[in-house]
Length: 156
Image (cartoon, rainbow, N blue to C red; front, side, top):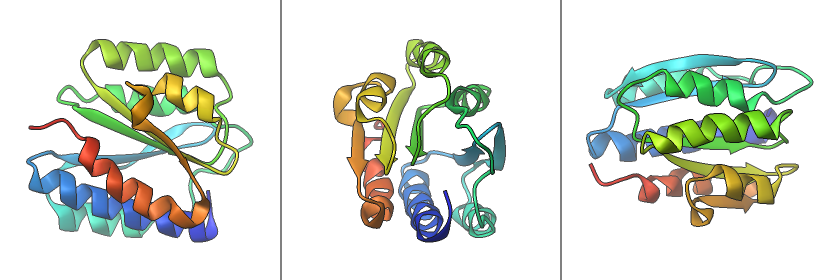
């Protein structure tokens, strides 16, 4: 993800974090491509989150989308209520991602999926905790979709 999409994703993530934090959730952000990396560990401080997210210029660069690695990284946090997956591509290993997602779902963690561009709509519906937690939007609506994901967060 790069350019206008990364800007929309960044702004949407900040909006979502504000919504989550006001509902007493800590918020974290990981990025993934060939591998996954944490941008911000869980925090209940919206300003810290916004500063770290504002530094994102582009996602990790690579020829593949290792969604399973991103989900594994998220799953390392014990007190995890929800994971919001935002992608503009296809997972390089759908089976591995679905396996990790099943583990998270078994822990009672909601998985909310937002796809754009080349994201596979059917796969995202299977990855999400429920099919209504998966959406596919145009790039120009990415920020609004991420911001809106806050309404799907479990009641704390």
